[in-house]
Length: 278
Image (cartoon, rainbow, N blue to C red):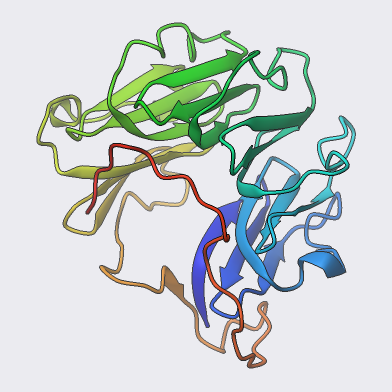
């Protein structure tokens, strides 16, 4: 089975197949694996919070499920024209095609309080209790918890092309391949080699979770930093799609065939004015 997109929550994983169907495996403590009928197909993106998930449909609508103690799975009524979603510990974000951001769920640290006048956003990211927005100018706007300094100096870097947020941590990547880490270094998730902070590093992607962070290189190599509890510190990404291939022996996943009739990308997209390509 081939997947176009993947996301991982605390104990549950998700994948969008080539058939634009959504698959889930792992624990189901809060109904994380109980995908609603509306999110069974026509899905183009998925985001996973700690115990909830968001599915972006090809028509620009959003479906949410899982833990809902802070209303993080209550999609605002009338939400349309969404082109990207992000999920934090107990809050959710949606980016609309007009460059504005909608947030809902927990707001104890201001993580769901979108700054007034925020516009021209091309990407979003949600940490456990903070939120990020990448503008088409290459600048980053952040709001929410600053307990570990994860947002205090985030406005300094320019020409940013990618953002990522984790547990009290923030990662930015600029057009030169320079990585900017902010926040706590729990489990060594921010302990990158010196060349990661210099132009010409050949780094083309960044991502972060609760216990690990990943730097993706132009060569297709992924370097993983942080906890070694799973003894996985270096991996290699295929140089062309699909993102992941699983065999039918993975009995936890459906194996029925389906003829794709949908596209991976929503009908409306926003593209940053600066990009860094592999």
